[in-house]
Amino acid sequence: MTRAGAAGLLLAAVLGGCAVQPLPPPALACQQAAEATKPGSAALARCSRSLADPRLPQADRLASLVNRGVVRLKRGDLAGAADDFDLAIRAAPSFADAWVNKGIALSRQPGREAEAVALISHGIELGPARPARAYFARAAAHEALGKPREAYEDYAQAAALDPDWAAPVEELKRFKLVRRKVLRA
Image (cartoon, rainbow, N blue to C red):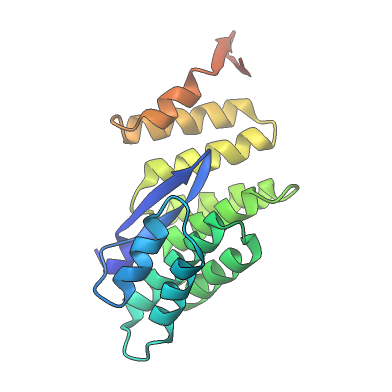
């Protein structure tokens, strides 16, 4: 697996972003910024400095783009985050975590949840490093679209893929099954 392919999904509230790791300096500072719960403006600057380094290998550049996108996402800059994920997608169309994160950014924009589901689904097909997090993100987007059955199935898949992760199990508790129908509690 490449450095850019080793990813972890960080969640803030229901959705978060995927911080790519491990990376050598200078990209390591950007990775650490993406892993912060509430990254500040200095975190964004660290990522931009990493990307400005002409010696940065391509895999690390892609990872830094995604990490800067995660920082922007956590700071509420949805357009900037989507731009970074788009740059990563254009440079490496098979980079699953960039697709998943782009979907997460869109899912936070009212009226774009269907696009988010499509992007996250494509990322899942490509094989994200931590698929449970991708299914969790898609579940939340399905829920925003008013599709409880699909949301339930994705939360269940996330729980099955990462049984030690409590978040999907907690989300599943909000649902009840009624004669093959799934309803939110």
